[in-house]
Length: 148
Ligand code: FES
Image 1 (tube, rainbow, N blue to C red):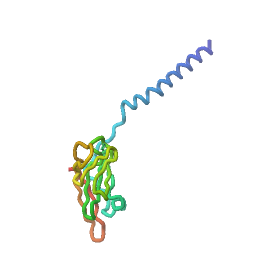
Image 2: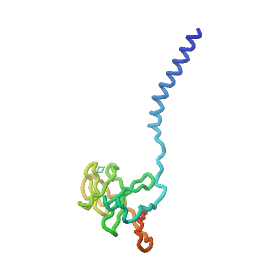
Image 3: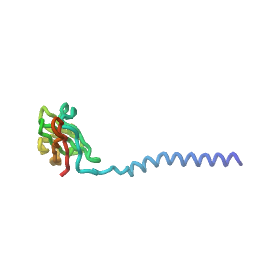
Image 4: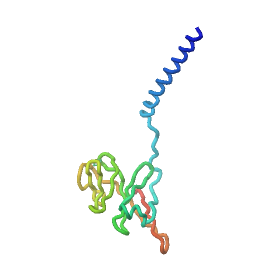
């Protein structure tokens, strides 16, 4: 009798653990954690001579959960746009040789005003304001991006 009770208890515990290990991931999938929204409308993107900006011509900033692409068009010409394609939300990149913002998911293309130039994107990229803040003589200016 004692052994039978132990086996029943053990099978009950095992069944509970098995159902828990199946149901918990399903429940987490159905209820994903809250992703923080953009908690700021202003981000300091670093100095104008940031090596990433000089080498790649762009970098991706984060406004909370919102990616923003900052583009160095020329030494004193910086532009910023929402970093997700308006088609299906892929992250865009800047191609300096073609002077275009490009989405590699479906070959979407935007011009340097964020307007759709080619491909499937249905609307332009959101434009962000870029300011260059002076840091005194001999110091590189700081790029500040603001959501307007
Ligand atoms: S997601 Fe960018 S073109 Fe489709």
